[in-house]
Image 1 (cartoon, each protein chain N blue to C red):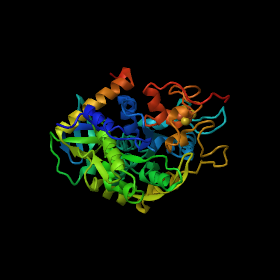
Image 2 (image 1 turned 180 degrees about the horizontal axis):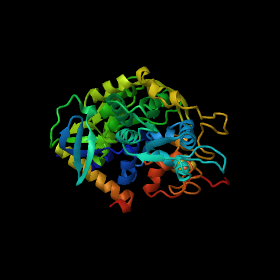
Image 3 (image 1 turned 90 degrees about the horizontal axis):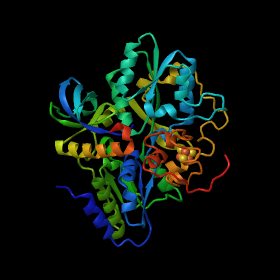
Image 4 (image 1 turned 120 degrees about the horizontal axis):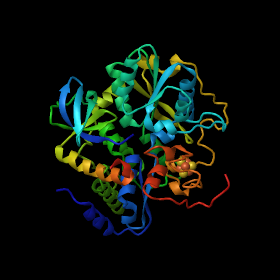
Amino acid sequence: MCLAIPMQVRDIDGFLARCEAKGVSREVNLFLLQDETLQAGDFVMVHVGYAIQKMTEQEARSAWEVYDEMLEKLDPAHA
Amino acid sequence: MSTSAKTWLERIHALPIKNKLRIMNVCGGHERSITMAGLRGALPKQIELIPGPGCPVCVCPEEDVYQAIQLALHENIILVAFGDMLRVPVNVGKADIRSLEQAKASGADIRPIASPSEAVRIAREHPDRDVVFFAAGFETTTAPVAAMLAEGVPHNLALLLSGRLTWPAVSMLLNSDTPGFDCLIAPGHVSTVMGPEEWAFVVKDHGLPAAVAGFTSESLLAAMYSVLRQHLEQRPFLDNCYPEIVRPGGNTAAQRVMQQTLQVVDANWRGVGVIPASGYGLAPEYAHLDVRARFPDYTDTARKRAGQMPPGCDCAKVVLGKIYPNACRLYGRACTPRNPIGPCMVSDEGACRIWWSGGVRESTAAAIEV
Ligand code: SF4
């Protein structure tokens, strides 16, 4: 439940964004980042469907690597 | 280029650590990263890594879970909850329904969700029915719940809120006679939202080293190296080893939204008791959304073992870092992820579940008849 994942913003409509991570597309709520300026292409850390912070592309990519490894080890069925 | 895990390990091994040192983490995500990367085995043997209060599902009051089950069984509602909550057992007689999962199997309308926005969607899709959102979680999960409230929820959505704050449990441990740790790794995503400053009390009031960490081995080892050096040099300070998203002051918009919609209250932690100012309740303007204002109270605190952990389950001690998961007599015997006895084996953030996933299969405790 607490696993937050970095996602890339594809398009924004008000406080809703379509975001993508590793080919998976999700609707993400941006309400908690209302003080930030966000645009398509930005990376955000997403927790339970809500973006909680902006991040850089490089940071997003290194986090993805960790999660990949972890998911593989955790449950081979996920891989 | 950031420093590699290997380099951090070499630096840690080069430190002149003579005595046993206990580093506590308070985040299920940290414990998972540590266990899956095998960091325990890679560190000098004087260093102990202790999983502490990092699992909100584990400490969610038994009464709240019981209430959710009874509401789903007796009221014409749709109950939605994060998936982790569905298998958490309550203390009832053998023939009675002991989890949301069993209630669902017996016909109650219970739906696992992965986001507060799904609760809103389900409520909108069923305007003629009441929807109850059973929301357990620490700050990182409660902030999205607050955002959901601030954006406005449908009239038919009510909340059973079991949100908890992390730091008061650490504060309680530090104020006790036996805190059980020498250094703290502070949680990364809680600090992202609330700001790293929340953890300054560990250093200021208790003189212990502390460092915020992220979830890569690099970040965790950097934080461990930091607290070990702080300890050796006797110069504790609050370090931030997750600057990627942990900024000074945290996410102030999120904090503002939480202040508008919620209030901090004294709260019960399962098997532990009430910890002052450690829970989230609804702010007065949102009190009408509280499930307690809309439905009868089914809590039934006269039940045998109401509020406690299941018989024989040492989850409360595991959560407080008093024992390692496999020191529980039931670990890997009566209690496995397939047949979990306690919440620490149910939740993905529970230390018992994480250790089991990490390959620890044997209990270190003598077997007893249960
Ligand atoms: S192994 Fe099972 S019974 Fe023992 S503390 Fe963990 S969850 Fe509770």
